[in-house]
Length: 253
Ligand SMILES: NC(=O)c1ccc[n+]([C@@H]2O[C@H](COP(=O)([O-])OP(=O)(O)OC[C@H]3O[C@@H](n4cnc5c(N)ncnc54)[C@H](O)[C@@H]3O)[C@@H](O)[C@H]2O)c1
Image (cartoon, rainbow, N blue to C red; front, side):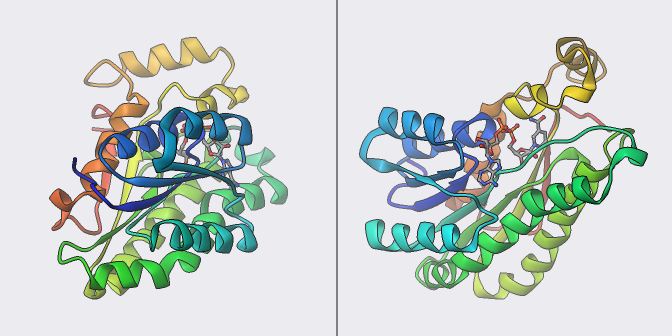
């Protein structure tokens, strides 16, 4: 059990990468608050996992929602040891079509929500860090597009680069308090997010072409992202700080 008695908040835990993280973290002994706007899937996963997983309907862009999630973690399990800001949305299209509304939506959901929940949880992360020699873990899900740029992805790419900027500045600011701050940069994976990014056209064709062009000749799966999160969140990752960890089979060599 690599996360025995740790309390984690995982946003976007109702589907995709977040759902894989929730399942893996509970299997490794953590008590998890699954925070998501998708009540149907979120409740189903919480019911499947039992008493160590609590679903909360939470829009991480809503400060009151975030405060309630933090309060519930404290009231139920006594604090927060791990925060994973994973929720996000995709977008693809030509730059000329990325109007103010598109840019605002991507920045709000992919950056401001992660920013706000981190602020709400920080007092509890600080308390946890004081009591744990190996530090407490603050993790962001960015993207390969937090590090690189590709065509038809401007608004998404900007929002994911911003997440890396937030991770780096918090790593500098919070590292001395023993709060380890890292980001995961997944490559493209076959999730709801990828499938709902409709401007791609035939998603199956796009995904198989991307897999062919990746050195490992395959795409990441949610469990690959969850395994990276487990390492970064566990005591085994105690010296890993300010890393943007690519989990993408070597895409963008
Ligand atoms: N799938 C990919 O190819 C890929 C690649 C790189 C990075 N990412 C990033 O990984 C993260 C997870 O993506 P995924 O592929 O698992 O997507 P997904 O759509 O399968 O899951 C995302 C979850 O986030 C939730 N969510 C969306 N907006 C929310 C909000 N405002 N508040 C709370 N929850 C919200 C959704 O309800 C959903 O359950 C995202 O940040 C995404 O940008 C995905």
